Amino acid sequence: MTVSRRVLSAWEMAGSLLILGCLATAPTIGQQPGGGLPETAPPPPQAAPYGAPRSESAMPQETLEDAWRVALENDQRVEASRWNITSAESTQAAAQAERFPYLTVGSSYYVLSDQPTFSVNLPPLPSAQLPFLNRDSVGFQALVTQPLCTFGRISSGVNAAEETVKANQAECTRTKLDVKMNVAEIYVVSLRATRLIEVAESKMRSLEGHTKDVAGFCERGLVSRNDLLAAQVALADARQQAMQTHNMLQVAYAAYNRALGRRLDLAVNLAELRDAGAAGDVEQWTTMAMQLRPEIAGLSAQARALREQAAGVRAKKAPQIGLEGGYVYQRDQYVDPNGVAMLAVGLEWTPVDSGRISNQAAALSEKAEALIRLRKDAESMIALEVRQKWLDLQTAQQRVPVTRQATAQADDNVRIARDRYQQQVGTNTEVLDAETLRVQAYTNFYNSTYESVLAELRLRRAVGNL
Image (tube, rainbow, N blue to C red; front, side):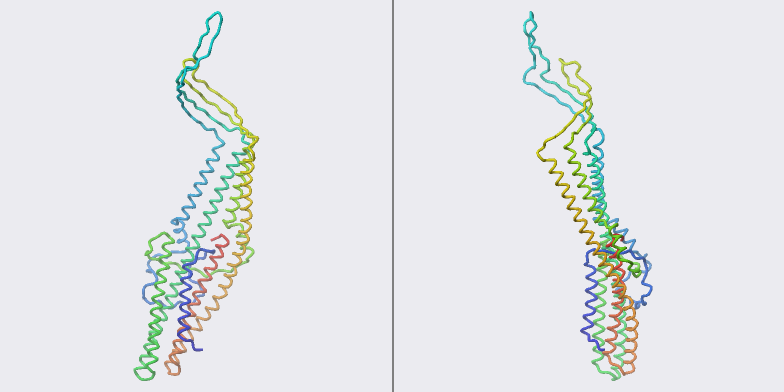
């Protein structure tokens, strides 16, 4: 069947939009493959030295695991998450310190408007006014306070701080997964763009050879000049498409370097990825996701932290008992001694507060219940997400053998069309259409192969095991 040049342009434009769309896609969900070209892939067309899409072969190849390691070391979002964990750990240490004694030291100086005295009336002596305090005095005190019984207020605060640390650790894990998925998306897009460059350049070389054949036939008067013009137009179109593909690859490399925190113009040499393995059982993937997804762990930890905070607030309604001891000194010539040691057991109790404490505790408990509901909703959404990514992986894997078979058929179609044209039993249009179908077949094959790898990565991201 004859395929027009208009259909060719539409196909190739769709391939370009597919690559650009992958670059713009936000991190979603994925799996970790190994290195190497898909074993069943047909050998790609030999790339011409046009624009050098790949880095120098002597440059060490960078695997996806290498890229993840560098990205996690340099990404500012991951670094911010680590600081949040450190902050939560400091809060936890402060809560634990509430259990231990603390020392307070103070000093004071006072001046009175009048000399304090007391009246003395001891008959038969006349009455007299005797001073008992200096008009001005300086003093200091050093006191040690040790909580004895807080009815769970301190322990609840410690437990709440521990759960907050866990929540921040879960958030850090989620950030790392997002960063790794973003790097994986760009990594696969870069590999696919490299393969599409090879396809574009093979098309250009094939049309260059065909144009020479047509020019020779035209000089001998065997074909019309219209055939030569059509071949030259197709060759020019292939050249500009190769330029566009090279540009997309350079954009992908720049995005890759940015994701790793490097200079945008740094040379890149990426190792190939293997084809995805079997999809496995969706129920097993879902069970694993419920255990590994940091969003579920984070919401659970936040809910437990709020409940512990509520328990700590309720404990304030119970008596708070503490031990206090120390040394107090106040310089005064009328008092002896000026310094004394002290030891006291204190009790603080608020039996009636008009509902302040109970309402504060209820507010925290209600927030915890809200988080429990959000966690249940998240579990449902994660189960749906896992099933969707699992189905996407199955579809992508089924496409690979179909498109692989089409590449062999397209190669034979081009060979037959070229032979027929050289024997003057075929037309120039048949050759151009056959070349268009060959390019589309290889484009579809590489797209399906890398979509299969990417679908596996997204499934593992959905599970939380990237």
